Image (cartoon, rainbow, N blue to C red; front, side, top):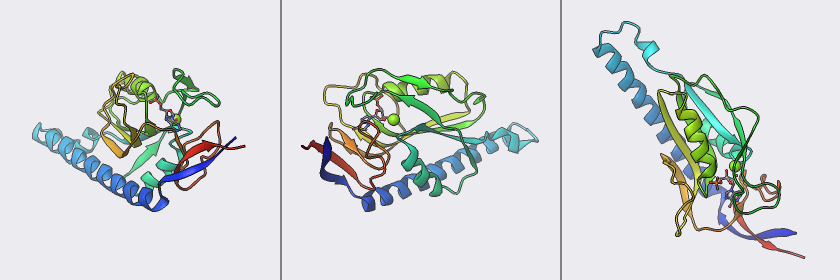
Length: 198
Ligand code: IMP
Ligand code: MG
């Protein structure tokens, strides 16, 4: 059995940071749209709107469920949401056991402006795999947003480019705000560490 040890990030700290992330992500997507439209205009393209791809958010379930719900509501951006389910920590494992895709990875992303959203970057296996699967479909642009970026003094299994990271945290196991241990604790509003309890 596990119980809460201490609060690492409070709901207030998380709310503030997620709001900032949503706003800056939305602003960057706006600027990008202006850039693509400007380039199309300069090239004499009459259908400038068609030069700017639709925004597709890809939350990695289940961990990114809560983060995505808050992030997208901080973004006044026209978007669709196409979740993917990946799993790398089966059951009570607390280290990555290799990634499996459950169900389908979104297809037809060619020309879309894709934002992959995940709860945490740990070994890098999950986002490394997904980044490659999405890049292969030739989106117009691709961004990765994670709430937590775990410090890995010994280096990551896979170095993944992440454009937006909410907090850098020490290399310890955390739950809450979408993150689980053995399927539990996802509904905690704060991000906490766990200890063994009797
Ligand atoms: P990676 O493939 O090792 O980078 O792992 C990423 C996935 O593992 C995340 O999407 C989480 O679901 C899970 N994960 C990694 N670290 C933690 C943690 O500290 N608590 C809960 N889940 C974690
Ligand atoms: Mg996950």
